[in-house]
Length: 391
Ligand SMILES: *Cc1c(COP(=O)(O)O)cnc(C)c1O
Image (cartoon, rainbow, N blue to C red; front, side, top):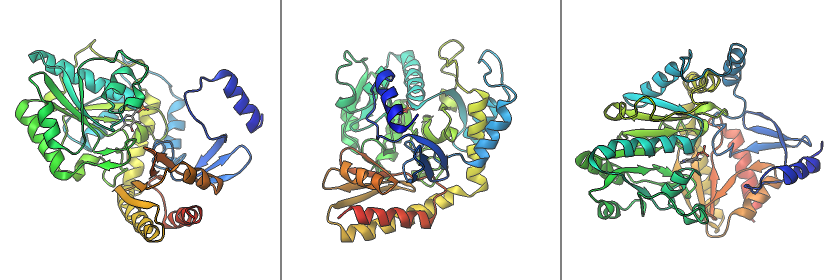
């Protein structure tokens, strides 16, 4: 089948929940992907950072290949060889506690919401404070937690118990608190919301409030986790630990896996029978995730992320001097946004024609999240294309 036929097949049989670029991707290696016609692209936005180590990282491919011959799925009423090992790895790289495994970001956040409610219910508390322009997933509870009306419209009635307040505004948090408040849920860097970075003082203050009022503080690190920002987890930039952290996207090096990590005080809240996921923590997903941790360490990818992040910011800043449409550059590590004073979709399209894949979020923010193995040469190439298309 050719590209046209494949698209026609989608049109006929796949529910149209996505606006798709008319290209069929058939192969990936590092920062390169190829389409069905053999065109090569430079991928600076590998699946919202799902392929965070670049496509088909050899350590991940080998781990999966070796394990898949043994067994593919082990149900969670038994033990498998790798789930405990991965939980240990996550905990050793974050904070003391325990992990629950699922398959996606929304599910990880659902688990977190249930944990917060289960904890709060001991004192009749259930409200969770979330933030404007946040993004937490597409299930009913997570679109409600998501502070953007466009994801909620048409799906009412929404579950009760969520309050949305402006981001980076501590007074708004304080005035939203009631005797029913059970927790606060936030992204330290809002991804879909336009790469909005939480301020240091703000995050510290939120931690203080949660400690004082015995609230559960949830950091949604689904997009920021696994080295994206130059630290394994974004909370490390702030010197503030959450009570609950959610992960997905690059956790599996391309394979679907999500996790909710609960700190010591919260690790016993969910008891047998209270939550589950049939596929969660399958040995194959865990083998991929363990390989991601191994690759980050072995190839020193956190320092590469910091170095290449700085290099990319430097190059974007040079570009900003030449291009009046660039308003601001934001982000940490290799999670970077370039806010334009025009809509960004034409730029994304023009980059695509030049075989550079990037993204635009929140209408006017170009988003760059290349695999953390990115090199200076690849950054130079991307900047050259951007320079050309931003006439
Ligand atoms: C993508 C994302 C989610 C949802 O993850 P899915 O795997 O699509 O369910 C949740 N939170 C954040 C911050 C995300 O970026």
